[in-house]
Structures are given as C-alpha cells and as structure tokens.
Length: 142
Image (tube, rainbow, N blue to C red; front, side, top):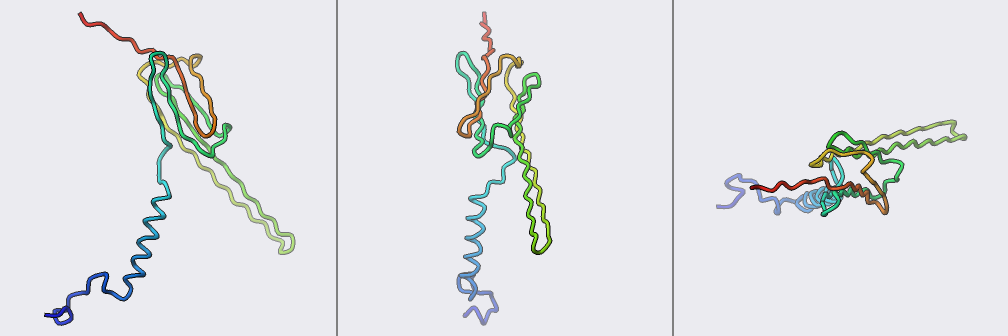
C-alpha cells in the first residue's frame, strides 16, 4: 500500500520544507549551545593543608563590578553591570537612551566560621581568587 492511499503523513525528510525545518532546528541548537543561560558563574573550591580557596571565573568583568560580603560561614560574590547608552541626533532633533542593569550573585558556604581579617581576595585575568586559612580541625577517635 502506498502512503497516499492510507492517508498517512510523509516522513519529515520527505516533506518539501524538510531542508528549511532542518536549518531552523540547526540555528536554535547552535544559538543555545553558545548562549549560556546560567544563574551564576563557574566556581571552584578546594583546600590545601593551610588554606581554603574559592576561585570564580569572571571573564570580561572589571574589579570595580565585584562585591564580596561575609556572613558567618558564607561568602557572597556579587557581580554588577550597569550600562547607559545615549544617542543624540541634532539633525533629526531626537534623543535616545537605553539603560540596562544586570546583577549575578553566588553564595558559597565554607565549613568553618570566617573572620573578615583572615580573608584575602585577588582578581587577575578574569579569575577571582579568595583565600582564607583552613580552620579544619581533626579529632582523634579513641
């Protein structure tokens, strides 16, 4: 029996618009592969014998856009970006202003109380590095 006789739809690759549909599908796959819909930014935490270290990848961010806050055993890393674009056209007597504001935050919990005076932070080449003394205590079991 032929497909036309059974009134069944043709498979997608046999439709006249199959190439168009494939190109649209490919566009969205590539667009979302390159576009990151993340609620934060990449973090890496690790400890050495003497230090607890948190590293945040913040490419393209200026040091002035970063805020660090300490709460007991938590560190909040905030990144803000405010941008104002103004265009003035004297010939057409028009003015256009576009404003955008974006803020991203991550809260990191560490396994001990944090003293502000012990925390050191540096920012270089898009990498924020927060270092503090490792206050982990090991308890011997009898």
